[in-house]
Length: 336
Ligand code: ACO
Image (cartoon, rainbow, N blue to C red; front, side, top):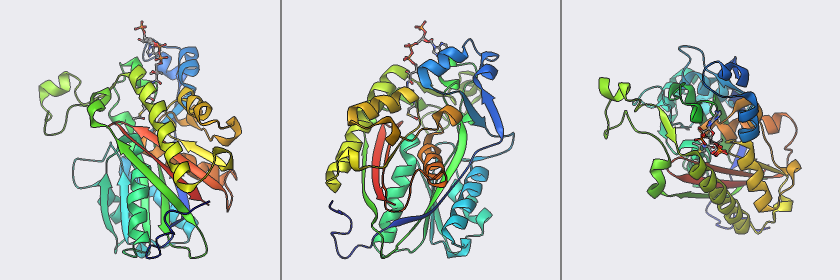
């Protein structure tokens, strides 16, 4: 096994020293959705594997969920908020256009020394944030970085659109990045994008191209729209490529990976990616059944559950692989 990061002597290794997550209390089941749109538990389960998702309470925001996940990650890492140097929040559902959700989280945590900013790479956001945050630690710029994926997808869902409203859920996950001299940690990250396919999955209103007006609201421009079939095909291809690139960079074979954590979009996407990679079902972590697609929070929540549930132990090789609107995609290999 080669270690692309550590082979450059001026860079430090970067470990994930604590993870945490938070999902809202309210559960929305497929039976509940049957009352909202013309759909069925059978259709949703067979097409997506999703049985229920969590929906934030009225007034519960992305920053609220992010701060709760972050507090757990900090506790698990044994890090005090005032020791944080940087907070990065990946989200497509920020509390507001500005200031950043990361600044709201910084204040809520009492992370008085930390710089804070948001990044936006849709469902790929957590791996993008992990990659960005790790470079600050590797380059000795900062010692302790908090990366968070958090979404209130229910705030951009058209509850009359059965093509999308059955797929998404709310939640947040977080990880603390630090240098642990004896550990290999993050071995590599790969990121990619294709803006030529931006129209496959988008919220068109609310930005400079289509500011909010009474007409933009009436026309449903502030809701998420998706070409499901094309998104599905692109997701599988991009995730297979991203995973393969990351393994190749590390000189690893898929069978050496203890736990693969793919973006939890849809059980059929997870199965197709696993099959094309030659991975066994026991290697792939899935909680999509309980949470649906929580976008940037998805792999962060899954990583936390895999760690707390004992699926990942010290020394295990872990592969994260993600895909989202943009299009964007990414992967990371971690020696835990
Ligand atoms: N209940 C019942 N029928 C539905 C529903 C629903 N909830 N949603 C759509 N349909 C209907 C459609 O209207 C369509 O009907 P028509 O043929 O009469 O027009 C039909 O079902 C479509 O059926 P299929 O083509 O068999 O559906 P498909 O197998 O493509 O599954 C799905 C649709 C689940 C959306 C799939 O395309 C998918 O998972 N795509 C990827 C979605 C995704 O993961 N996006 C996010 C990834 S990136 C990110 O996370 C930001």
